[in-house]
Length: 369
Ligand code: MRU
Image (cartoon, rainbow, N blue to C red):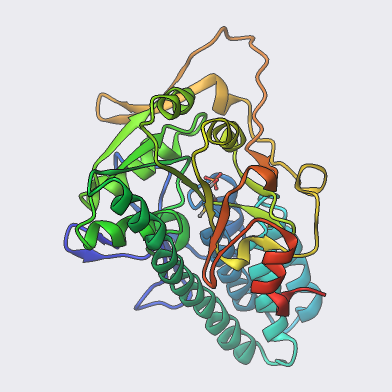
């Protein structure tokens, strides 16, 4: 996507020094646009844990580049297979919920199986990481085309009045290398001249909605309104929401969807108000090995300080302020699981399907065993 007149992906290889991976520092947005260099496996681990990079597809791509950087750390003394599997384990441990991370890392490791020299390992790992970025970009483009049909149908029914879409967190181009999953259909609708308006959940505690989704939509001229996380139910009752579209960090083979904490409550409110609730996700976010999201998906627990403090711009600097008594005990569960029965459908790169094992299997039969 463009920032001003300049095209950016949210991750890329330095043009002059291919041993450096460049990322947009999402901790600084929307206040400062800064690019960070990742030069080592440790840099990649830190960037994922501190959320310099975040969003399921981007976490996956960054992990894949982490394996590439691990190949550059090989010396004549290195026991190569041990070194790579240690790097993989370490990187996979950086964030537990988004399945894209282990998927992407294992994808690169698989490609490296028949390589022996450090030069060929590095070349193959780099190619595999770039391929993952291209696949995710293409997935978003396809999700955009499929999701557009839903928006077009609502727009026709509303005789051209703006289609009100509610989203949670950030499943935009920053999270997905380019285009975004949730945002791709919205950008396409806007390009086609279909009036759209997005209700952006602020997404406490880290406010990815307020900071990132609002920034992206604003940069692309999409009308949006920022709302507190708890307003969605009221807006649905008032018929101010036509469709909810959210992303996913891990979806089971049966259609249970893990996404940013608070998503489940939006799904319940949508269900009660008979509002379609869709999840836009690439197949790299589907964990085909599990069936029960509530029991089997590991929910990341993050630093309670993210709840106790709010971070924003004050006097030209990014600052945090405490919003509760100093000795408050806080809990910070990063994600929740929306059971498939509350999901109207999944918008994937292969098309839209129901959130059921049967329909997911029909669409992705080659991934089932
Ligand atoms: O904790 P984050 O910011 O990495 O969580 C991101 C989300 O929950 C997104 O909505 C989700 O990753 C989908 S990304 C396309």
